[in-house]
Image 1 (cartoon, rainbow, N blue to C red):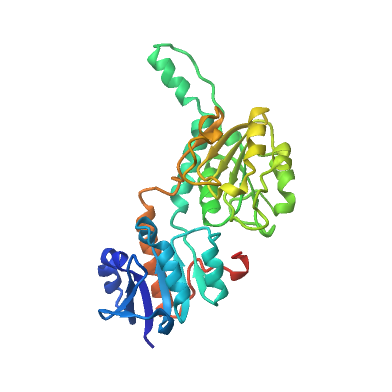
Image 2: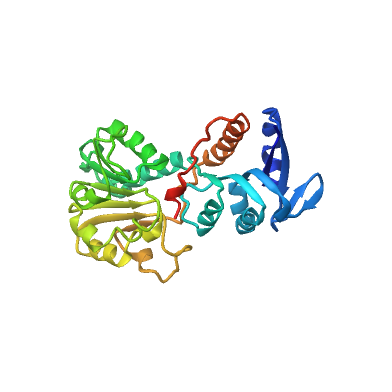
Length: 329
């Protein structure tokens, strides 16, 4: 049985040789920046075309072609599987695609880079590196005490591939790790596991709170006044998930009154962040431009994930990172 696979034409030019080397039996279609579908050199009508597997690569996003690709998927007569470069599926297009019966696989490729970003940012807060550099510049011989990672308690909210990679890197330091996830079932590297119902209790013990969960009706704005009131004094907050998880007014108030020590923010309600947003200049905020995913290994991992998954699909094996449609909202 031969399957029909569609991908962005510029992605094919980058991955074609490795795809050919797999020697898989499928019929290949491509689509361009304008969302036009092509097969055997001829333009195809989406509403007459059935596609078994569509790869939405990061290159689509880079070239500004992602929305056209979404529209194409929705316009097709049928699409069996969509594999995307996104980790989070809160874009409304994914719900529309899922509702048509299309299976969706998301990505773990960002997880390594994001976990290293989190570790680097947190360590830069608890270690007085800037003070040490100033002492060096001033030629002052002075001991600089620092907080040990081994004595910190971490709360990771969301335990998909990103949360798991963070825990994998934090655990060897000897830190304690608590996890909030959909069920309280024990998971690797976690000393304690709970659900959103346990959130405020867990927050009271956490020196570092990392938001790594999906954005949905249950999590939107959950980091609110009540949450920050329950947080441990001088906690460090890290958000590498989605901006709308946080009530910014409540967070800023918590920073101002000394409850939170630092907020490390890589995602925001509005992106790019407007220049008049007070987060830019807040002395206790460290912000970056949604860049935590941008490790040098993420693009090769995106490609590798597609190559692995298309092999599984053609061979009739289970797909990697297939998402339960019930959690796409």
